[in-house]
Every structure is written in C-alpha cells, then in structure tokens.
Amino acid sequence: MKFRAPHIIVLSIILLVADQITKIIVKTHMTVDQHISVFGKWFYIRFIENPGAAYGFELGGDYGKLILSLFRIVAVVVIALYLRRLVKRQNVPAGVLVGLTMILVGAFGNIVDSSFYGMIFSESTMSQVATFVPWGEGYSTFLHGNVVDMLYFPIIQIDMMPDWMPFWGGKPFIFFSPIFNLADSYISVALIYLIIFQRKFFS
Image (cartoon, rainbow, N blue to C red; front, side, top):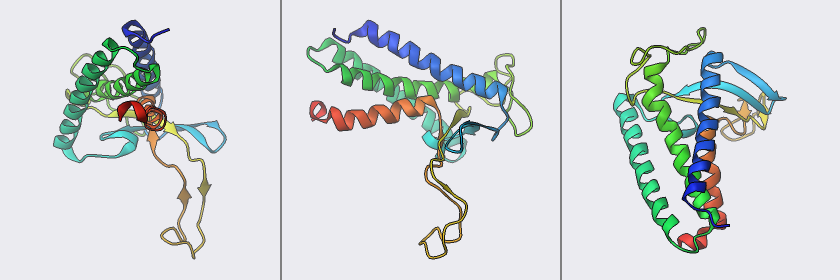
C-alpha cells in the first residue's frame, strides 16, 4: 500500500494529539520541577518549561525566543511544501514520507506551545499548577510562550565521580540529562532513521 496524503493527515493528527495531550496533562497537574518516577531511577516524568530550543537549550531573551518561533514556522512551511511535492511523485519510500511527517509534526507541536500556551494558561511555578484562563490573559503573549517538557531519562547516575576523572572529578554525573517532550522525540527519531536508512534517497 502506498503512503499517500490521507495517511499523512491521519498520522499527523495522531502524533499531534498525543503530543498536546501529554503536555496539557502535565502542565495542568504538576508544578515546575515536580517529578514522578515511571521506571525506577532511569525514567521520570519531570515537568519543566523550556523557553528556548529542543532538549532545554535556550536562545536568550525575548528576541531570541521570537526568532526561534519564527524559524520554526518557516521550517514547518518548507517541510510541508516539500512533503506535498514528494507525495505527488512516484516510488517515494514510505519511510521517507513517515520520517518527514514526524519532523513536521514535531516542529508544529512545539510551535503550538510557544505561540498559544502563554495566552491560555496561567503561569506554572514551583508551588502553583497552571490553569486555563480566558484568551489573552495568560502568562505571556503570542509567540513568547514556553514549551512544555517532561520526559527525563537519567539512564546512568553517579553521585560522585572519582577525583582522577578528567572534567568530572569530584562531581555528580548523569549520562543523559536533557528533558524533552514527544515532539522533540518525533524529530530526533525521524532524523536518525532518515540518516541511517534513507540516506540514499536524499543523495
């Protein structure tokens, strides 16, 4: 069965709904930096708000956030147009279309946060859970909201590294410390898949 436009639409809706539901549940039920253990010490739901790029990386200031939001919007438009062109072609691997759809939805999912969450939610703090508020009465303005992150996988944790270890001697160590969301994971998984398995198509 060929992967066509209706399949892309259905997949996009499923991925976007899953991303937004997890974000809204976390934001309206947890305080900032609250965490819940899912599997022992290596998988937590830990709520943070990210004012910058994926995996907690920041692009400083209001102008930086605005530039990042506009860049995401441009990227989504470009990917959507490219995906539309590929759908019309013959013999495009389904994996390529699925991968690009995941990247598109991942970018769009974070655009929703930065564009609208600041307008519809009250501020999340370390002592206060956010609530829905009337449109425009939230904690920020259009394109200046924070992205909700919650997936935390500190797979390897060492309370104190030996003194002889370079850079980390006498310090705690966490193998994978970024906190991210489903939208980020869509993008990362799709990029890895396309680079490893679909490199020949893009060449």
